[in-house]
Picture 1: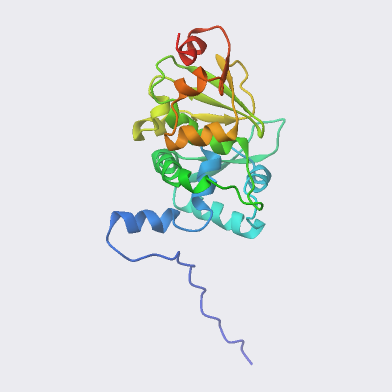
Picture 2: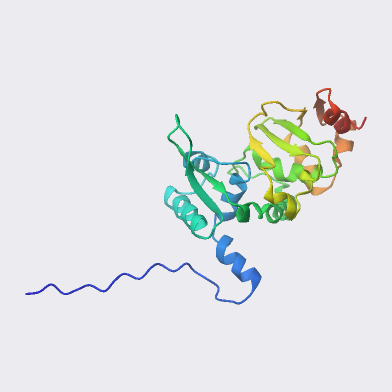
Length: 230
């Protein structure tokens, strides 16, 4: 008896709001849970899948893989293999993905007041303070690499020349922050998470925090001098 032919499987269609509206279209791409947090991680540069999973506590491997696939399909991210001798693959943002920088910066500013009380279940990573700190350093004119040391770890920022302003035009350039210490920092600052939150909420300026000793500036170059207010 001839086998009955099975109908061809239809391609899975991503959920959509089906609204002819720019906001709805944007949420079609980034409105799923975890997507914007993956963008936050990739704003610091290319990352391996295992690194992303480690710095996104609570996400399952299946969900992370699904979101990354969606981001590739929608043109937000791409995957590439590192050159030899490394055989690892990394994910990185496209220009369209990097254009979400001001969106993430605005969300960080809007959400900062909700961090008044840290819950016992809250995870934290040092580089999660990068975007709020960039906003606080938007007025810096001396361009350079700034290493940031917190009790939770280290990261580095590219500041000056408009980089800290997190405007749409800045998103098309190189990463504005990175993980771990800088290779050749032009200046270093030491502070704690509480001061970062005050700066993010506008309850203190960077100059005030330096003056009262809650931010320590290390280094001798022009960037360090400007950060000290000299």
